[in-house]
Image (tube, rainbow, N blue to C red; front, top):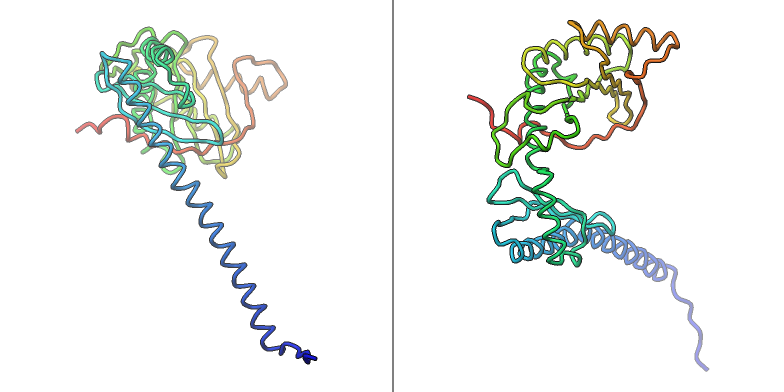
Length: 276
């Protein structure tokens, strides 16, 4: 009859430690594979799909040629961006899935891109923002985060492909100036006056002015003002409107809202070369 010999405590301890080490190694490998999948494999696969789609677009669009700008997956959605080499202001941007790029849909996207001229509008918008950003930088310093603008409806119809940028060409330019500072009425009027002074130095064809305050780049308070009448001093008008609002009166063209601050990257230098 075989005699039972208990496993020595030291040996059991070594076996337990070995099991823990294997567990930690397994967890580490899993984390590493997860990071590689989301940071390397999925982006590379998305770019590969984007290049195949660019080839498919060029097979259908014979009078133009498109290069892949970006392609990425966000969950189950696929976003891709293509630039024309014939018209440097013409882009095809879509969230269409790779398998949905049929000839009919490609022609639809191309016709839509030409009709809406998104690239040209983007260039006009950013170039206008660049100009105002450059003017405000020495005035506001580190308080200035970014400048983003929009134009009045129908502006796209006034822009031709490859048209040279012209400040003030498009109507209803509305800059949103992001400032890292406390959202007080006193600060709002102070910054509004500084922004108005810079806007008056050039023909921006301004429609309204928005100022967005944030202190943590997570939450924001936005003052949106659309003038109902024109005057010599917009600051005078907005001061009256703000006083009326704070006294409980109704001011349809001035709103103050709390919202989330979307701290997405915006580099004003990538649109136009600096003037010598």
